[in-house]
Length: 382
Image 1 (cartoon, rainbow, N blue to C red):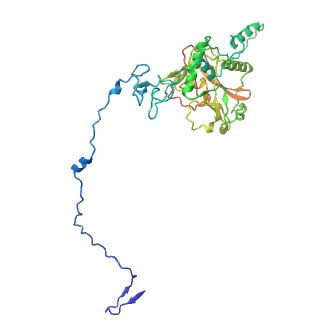
Image 2 (cartoon, rainbow, N blue to C red; image 1 turned 135 degrees about the vertical axis):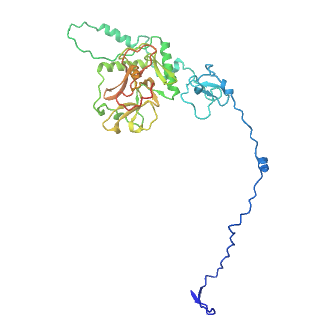
Image 3 (tube, rainbow, N blue to C red; image 1 turned 30 degrees about the horizontal axis):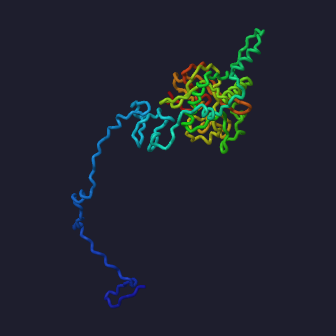
């Protein structure tokens, strides 16, 4: 509300602001006047409270560290030092073999609480592969029996017609020495144990993944070749031999560049059945971001959501350790000595590994990872 001050000669209006009083602002400091000086600590006071720095001398004692297993100091990038006893160990000399450099602190077997992995005994190897003991006392393998039956039923053909003979699968020929066969299976058991994988001689259908009803060869895009009756008998014969501990002459070895790989421990003929690719069956859509490097295509469906793959990250056999060739290198293609073939077996999809030529002892096994699809990057393969 405005009122007029009548006592003033110039009758100018004035406002009554409320009963609160205005506070008087502090006078400003002229711009020419400098601020008061801040009190700073002297260097003497600062140095008196500072902890002295001790110059660390570089320790060159690790330059003479050697491996406790092989006694060699070569390969510094593969030499692990125990964080407790400072002893050195090559990753490939440890058992199980250390594939990657551990993240964080690492302790050797003597300093850690873990029990060392010892060489598997004959009884443990037979239990690991669930080998069936023969009921009768006969030592003849099924391959020898089949050869005897072939000789009995062999008949001379009187026909002079020349026909193109279809190439048939050959059964595997195991090593004759039982101790050698146990040593071969021992290398596979050690490799699977080192990676935390359990042995499996067939496809596994786990709840939460693809059911067995999804694995039908009729869903294959373009159809799938059917395994013949004779080859099916050969497959069943080889599976029975696997259950008796009669495996193909193969060993799993570790290479610093290729990792685990498979090597022939005896001669293998062309078209010999080597192994079936085993593991957990799952949909490809569930494994698109999986870091497993051994996923195998099982079924290529018209509907991509129904495409199936085999994942040997928890269950597997020797087939997961066979390496692939470099598709972009002519020398890599020459190394191929086996192939991966998908067959329809009793209406279901199965993946078999078969030799494509004669394989000599000491030769490593390779096949083409891109036999059906050119999607696997093999540029970095040796």
